[in-house]
Image 1 (cartoon, rainbow, N blue to C red):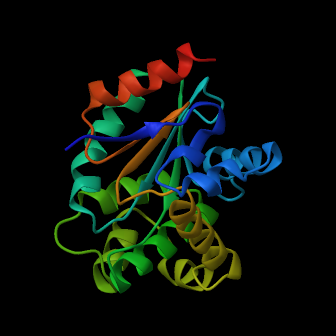
Image 2: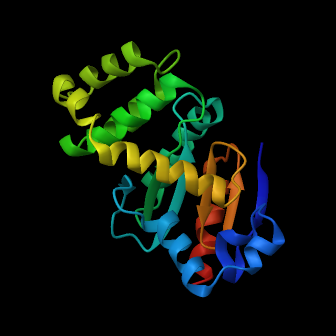
Length: 205
């Protein structure tokens, strides 16, 4: 189901379900910092065209049913629109299996296989948990021993905690949540809806 959160307008994500006073108290510098964290935070995985002219952001969890349902729609958008840069925030909110999957996905960046691993986790059968995640890792050609070592890196924990804190700060109500330009939408989106969101962001530039 599609649920619009808000028009982000000049204050971007500050108009999501935050207390009005909190939004009003933010300085231009704080708003700019939020924008950077959402669209271009350090270490965030990128799919599609890294130099694209439009950015789509997804906050997702590998055990989220609607994230999995949206995954082929997102893939179809990236295939049909080569100008889209997809930025992914891993926000594991469905338990320990989700956390393990998020850590593994981020660690896969070190082996240059995040996109393949991300897509495989989204289409896997059953729940994402340690055994199933490592099985998928082997299937996509990851060095599993290295992956498990890399998952312990402090920056992996930091990246997840920062994305979780950001989602809470801007008032996201669940996964998947998509952000582009000045709009954020919670819930499953079909390819045409995603394309519309991206088109709005392009037109607003």
